[in-house]
Amino acid sequence: MLFDIHTHISQFSHEELDSMRQRWHLNNVGFVLSAGTNAYDSRESINLSKKYPDIFAGIGLHPTEINEDYENQINDVFNLMNDQVITMSEIGLDYLPNSPDREIQKYCFLRQIEFAAQNKLPIIFHMRNSNEDTLQILEENDDKIITGASHYFQGTLKDAERIIGLGMYVSFAKTLLRDEGLQKIAQCIPIENIVLETDSYPQYFKKNRQRWTEPKDVLLVAEKLAVVKNISLEKIIQKTTKNSMDLFKLSS
Ligand SMILES: [Zn+2]
Image (cartoon, rainbow, N blue to C red; front, side, top):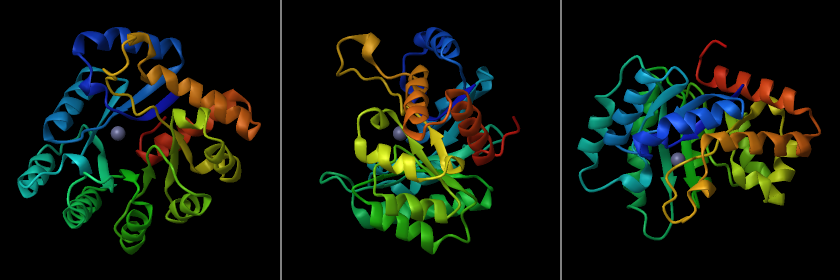
């Protein structure tokens, strides 16, 4: 069964969850991580993981959610820590032009890396237009980091090698289906360092509900990876799920 290591399913209307779960079960998806982007979202993810055996919870403050009250925002997330939480997610750096102040982002990222270390949690990190600074912070704090994954990976082969050098995983999403540069990177790096995701969130901008990305679509990413790496789909599923279990320290 497949593991979707990064989604925002807590943001979907809760009435949709049962049908979404049916669809992902039909597509051989057995495990879905619900990531938090702020304290509210993180609490929702914990609630889902309590309710459903195939949903797991991450907590975190996403870089684009940071506001001037960031000290309280961070503490509100930290206060949610309990046994349901298996990762700090989603954290990281986002350097789009309108994103929050970069120094504050770095501070929040570092605080959350340290919190993950204290609680022996892996980190699932976001890096958008910020690869150099993100990787530098991770390398400087290598001794604190348990393990982690670069979610929605969009970078160079060198970036991927630096992530693997830190003992971390590269997570591919549906962009693998069309991005030839990413396909080349997926070809070059070992399957032992690859995990899969959809980053599903409610895509209100798509009028046709059936075209929204859902955890069921992680099967499409696995199928593409099988073609790109010339490995059977069965093996891709088995390996990437084992990697995900190792990443989150879950026993399969
Ligand atoms: Zn995300």
